[in-house]
Amino acid sequence: MSIVLRSLSLLVGMTLAAPAFSNCLTANETKQGVLLTRKVPFYSVFYKPNGPGLTEQRLMESNHSLQPVSAVYLHPLLVETRVGATKQELKYANAIALDDLPQKKNWQSDTTLFLNGQESVSGTTFIRFDGWGEETIAGCSYKVWAINSRLELTGLPPIIFEQYYSPELRLVLRSVRLDPSNQPMSEVRFDRFEIGWGN
Image (cartoon, rainbow, N blue to C red; front, side, top):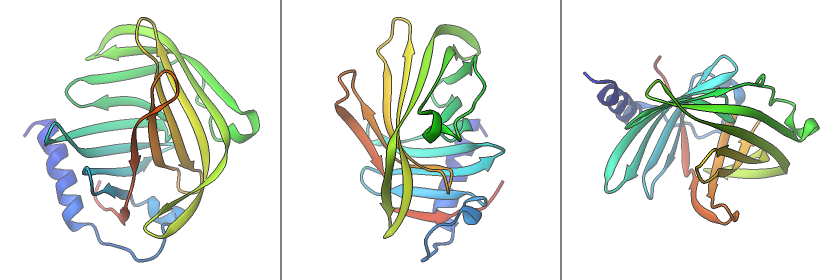
């Protein structure tokens, strides 16, 4: 079975079988892995802690079909590898030091993009702390950092996200894609959560 089909099968299985919890998520529960879902358009992502970072398995509706994607994060705010139609890897020159972002306000690093193992283009990643906020999922509220994340690669339009990150859960609970003039293009806001299982 291909990696894509395995990812799809695993994520569909977790969507059907993961037990629902009526209580709000806790940091201890997220260590088991957590499934976050948006109903319309369908978007489901399973996060599992992996040292200081996360692994991600995503299933989303795109062009009227379900598209599986998997990813590895060095920190919940910083993706390293994403595998979908292609394999994309980002290599960062600087140490990953984001847990004290509210104090230092900014982090940046020279960044190189690899496509299917081949070096493609270089640039800079910028992550900025914009303040504290609150996000609600399924009636549960969580304190979050408001984060502006920007990847600038030579010859390409910037990739900009406004993210709302819970340091307690170590999860991004809402994400807004912005255009170069900082206007919203798309948004992922989850409707529900479930505690996941599996390895």
